[in-house]
Amino acid sequence: MENEKDPSKNVPEQPQAGSLVRILLSMLEDTNDDELPCDEVHELVDHYAELDLRGEDVERIYPLIQLHLERCHDCHEEYEALLRAIRAVDGEIPAPQGKS
Ligand SMILES: [Zn+2]
Image 1 (cartoon, rainbow, N blue to C red):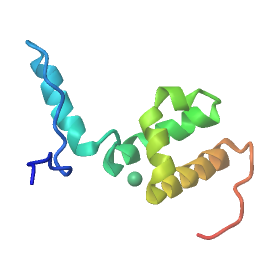
Image 2: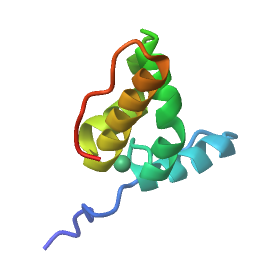
Image 3: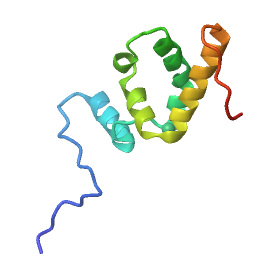
Image 4: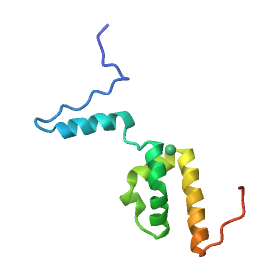
């Protein structure tokens, strides 16, 4: 049998000479794939929700959060709760009656 690449090991790209930062970054990114951990999303999601309600282009500003919210149920619920809370504070749209 040929010694094939272990699919569980992501072989990083060949580092360019003199870019140690790049190597370190790629190592960090390797652990997360291209996603943010829930912790970081939780820290940023309130800001994200505010921007979203303001009509900012959040998909461009925080693409990784958007991606995470699409994939992570917990964080998405957190985000929706924040949207409701911010709307309620703004008083523009009454908060919908619902579970509490
Ligand atoms: Zn999450």
